[in-house]
Amino acid sequence: MSEQKATPVAFRFQPATKEALRVIAERESRSMANMVEWLVREYCEREGLGWPLAVAPEKHAKKTKSRA
Image 1 (cartoon, helix red, strand yellow):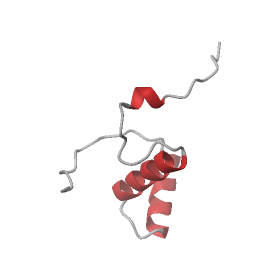
Image 2 (tube, one colour; image 1 turned 60 degrees about the vertical axis):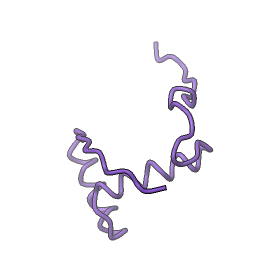
Image 3 (cartoon, one colour; image 1 turned 135 degrees about the vertical axis):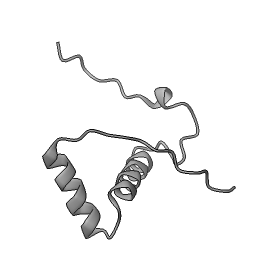
Image 4 (tube, one colour; image 1 turned 90 degrees about the vertical axis):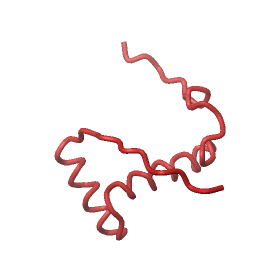
């Protein structure tokens, strides 16, 4: 299977979050975009979702307590 072309995504981060991402990406010798992609993959694998996701993401949603 050939790898698909990357899709552009834009995020807004708090300055401290952006700086943390920059620092950890630099420590890992990765770009910030590649670090985000790696973190998402690691999370999916750790949570047993697999990579790439085999089914629609909403089927994997965790139930959370209401904050009301």
